[in-house]
Image (cartoon, rainbow, N blue to C red; front, side):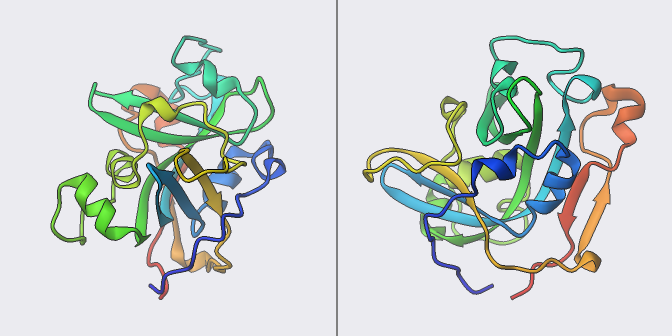
Length: 209
């Protein structure tokens, strides 16, 4: 894959206000997930996502309109980061979508690293990339320097000053071929009963060069 330079042009708020979280989860494939942490910029192409459809989705943290200190950020307006700690170890990055008060979210499960790979290797304690490097949500956040303390960050603005942390998503201009996209059930949500079988997980079969 040829690197696409960071343009520092995040997706606009209106993109995230789309009420169809399943559509957005699919549409995020092929876009750039970018970070600036401690003055260092990194990004990767989003290759796998999962949609979580709020209060009616038994797999969602907000199912049944459950509002806690952790899930409250899911009720923010679309374009907000929801980052939570899993198993007390791994930060998992989610994109809040829909209007304020509707807790839709999309988990970014995998990326294809493109820029800042040396930094990603250091963060992950690896000597090289390859199979398994950023193919899970905890690995994605670790490689990009995303921490659960970043929950609530606005994904539509980039604060001035290199010392200020930022997370955003950009267009790449990639045209996704329907034949490249696979859909299936989400991972690790067996507790959700019939909702566990919904095809809310999307991934790119192969990222083009």
